Image 1 (cartoon, rainbow, N blue to C red):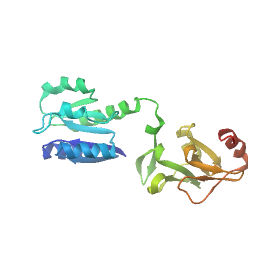
Image 2 (spheres, rainbow, N blue to C red):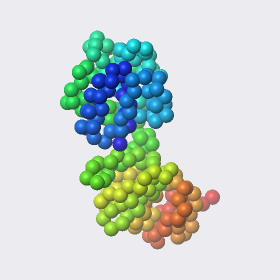
Image 3 (cartoon, helix red, strand yellow):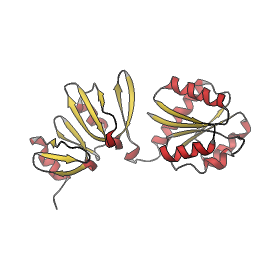
Image 4 (cartoon, rainbow, N blue to C red):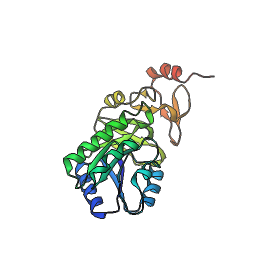
Length: 231
C-alpha cells in the first residue's frame, strides 16, 4: 500500500481526494483538517506522499512543507493558480489546481511514485508487488523476514507480527524480484532476509523473532558459508 496523508482545512476538498484515492486503489489515506494533527501523523507514520493545501487559515503551506521529513513526496493542492510557483521553493512533485479531476490526480500520483523510486538506491525503500485476493499488494521488502513456498503459493512472513501474506506465484519468480544483496535462497522452499539471521549451523538457521529454525538445503550450505563467513 502507498501511505498518503492529505491536509486541507476544507472537508469537501479532502472528500474529493479520498474518492480519487479509492478509485486509484492501493492507497492508505489519512485526512486532516488540522495541520498540527496532520504533521504529528506524518512524523509518526512517515507517509510516501502528502497532499498539502497551500492556503489554510492557520498555517502557511510553504512553511509547513519545510517541516516535513526528508524524502516525502509533496503534492500541492490549491484553488489559487498563482501559488504554483511556490511549489518550486519546496521541491513539490506536482501541483493540483482545485477542483481536482481524476485524470490529473492519477498523473500526480504516478509522478510521485516515480519520484520516490528515483530518490536513490536505498533498499529500505524497495518494494515487492504480489497479487493477493485478485488485487495487487505492495510490500516493503524491509518488512520481510522470510518467504516460504507451498506448492504454487508463497507465504510471506513479515516483521513485528504483521499479518501473513499468501500469493499464488512460484518462489523462483519472487526470488528474481528481491534485491540479491538483502535476500538469499537457503532451501528449495525458503528465502530469508540476511539481516534477520541471528545464527546458523550446517543444517538450519535462526531468524530474529522467529521461533522455528529454517532448514538449510544441502546444495545451499556452501553459499551460506560464503555469505556468512565464520570469524
